[in-house]
Image (cartoon, rainbow, N blue to C red):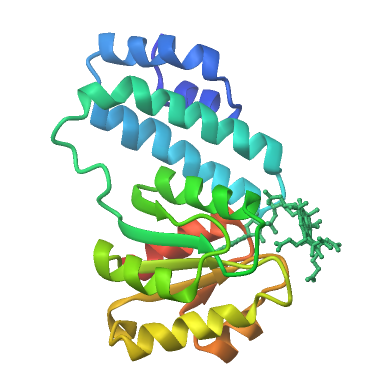
Length: 210
Ligand code: B1M
């Protein structure tokens, strides 16, 4: 028997195997792909984000949920023609120059995608000039910067300065994160926001893009 609660539960528990059948049941019950996306998958990932913030879900479980969400999206994609899937906005994300850590950044990118953002992931060790170019090319509204080393955190200020020099700063919101980063540092360098984890990053991104 179809229910959105069941789809949400399957995504949250990372039950990739049961999702094709649940999606099929939803279609047979007359639900549209758009509804399955918004009322099933995206709401489930919102809950994942909240549970992560509350320390009720941890990285391996979040990765499983994100994988289940991605696999289900593949099933829905052919039925989603015409749906503005990236309605939340465009985001450029990367780990700053000199820094090769990408597990947290990948998690943030996944949560942003799940929240409906179109995400351009520049990878790791990304020079400041590349962030500026990407914002211009992509006409992004948001940049998310990740740093895991105290020695690479200063890159974030350099990127903010270069966005200002390029005349882009007033068109774009900048979010920062990563283990050594905190709200005080974000305030000091003039970032628009700081998020301690991927769930709150996606939530803050939505608020700032709102
Ligand atoms: Co490195 N490393 N590492 N490392 N490494 C740390 C970060 C370290 C704390 C370990 C330690 O000494 N205790 C330490 C940094 C010390 C410091 O500067 N304060 C360290 C060091 C020193 C180094 C090297 C210099 C070691 C060496 O070679 N001597 C070297 C540097 C290489 C380089 O980057 N140039 C190095 C290398 C590596 C590996 C390559 C081996 C590997 C990275 C593999 C990879 O990422 N593909 C690695 C790893 C795995 C770690 C630890 C163990 C784990 C990091 C991780 O993935 N955590 C780490 C110690 C630790 O944190 N316990 C450590 C899990 C991940 C989910 O968390 O990335 O914090 P995190 O992301 C979180 C939040 O921070 C937030 O969301 C995520 C969770 O939801 N978040 C954001 C992250 N980015 C965000 C962006 C946002 C918002 C939120 O945008 C808005």
